[in-house]
Length: 429
Image (cartoon, rainbow, N blue to C red; front, side, top):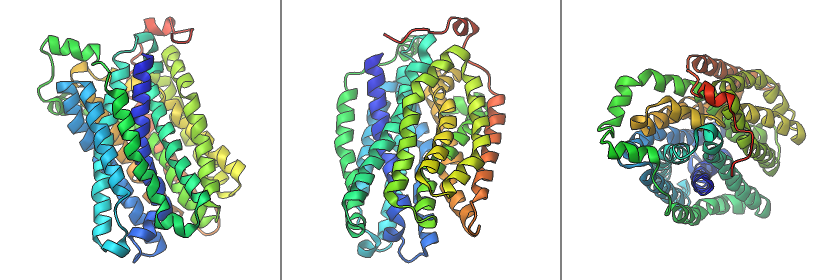
């Protein structure tokens, strides 16, 4: 289990490095480089538009790779998705700016971002199921939480490189070539991830399905016919997590640097510190999910997200690093209270024969609802609000949190009572 968890964590970290480095670049430099004929606000919105395309591609990736995972195994998904995302990310770093290619430059950016999202849409399902279906029932949330640490590691790697380059280079150097370095580094990381995953075994549950001849012939058709309500509920339930995370990690960077005049390195450092704490507490929150159930933690996380939205925006607006960090940390702790257990929760909601497709589609549809639109909506809501805090952004997050709370309330608990009464009391071997 340790080797499986490490390989899943490493792979998701690499793929989310690829995904997040684009979001940071969109917040900091892509607007003026690829949309220079737009106004500053319109350029930022256009850059976030290409950012959103990655989310729109993720459900398609979950359908494509979910079919592979349910028909041919979870293991092939982990190779193909990582390869696709890595190649697309390296290519982003090679696209010339608008000054060189004209309109072709943002079009290429759009296509490559779509391919990034396609690969990431398959990664989560493969990585989570590989750990969840190998894990013992009493510790499934704990072991399945390791792929959920991957996004935090990927974010820290992406922004750590961006922070180092931003601090070491002049603004002109950073805009000319410095922002491209993390995209080129993605090729090396992807090669390492593929090597690490080369020795992984297929999951016992998929082998049983294959031996019994019970694999789904058309997984998406079965999910659409028999589990459509579950897909919609899980997508709505998880939307708040995406909304909170990308408000903090993407929109806040733009708002802090452009509206508040906070130095770019200070903003990155505040967000990174909060994400580091979030990643560190993930397995401990997951252990609570093995003891008390998945649903109670998800409901608590939604409620905390709604209650903390206005304090977070107010703390951000101060422009003071310590207070901004506190605001970000509160939001991300509410986020991880939900997302530490969803890697076990979602697979348990679906039957094994369509689990890769159902869980991945629900998870990635939530990304469209909560992640794709949030930076755009938050940027629009924060404009024209005068000198006061952008309370419209807080109201937006509160509404999304309440909708997600209602969806979680309609989902069942999946942790058996017998397991809950005999929750793990020792660390895993």
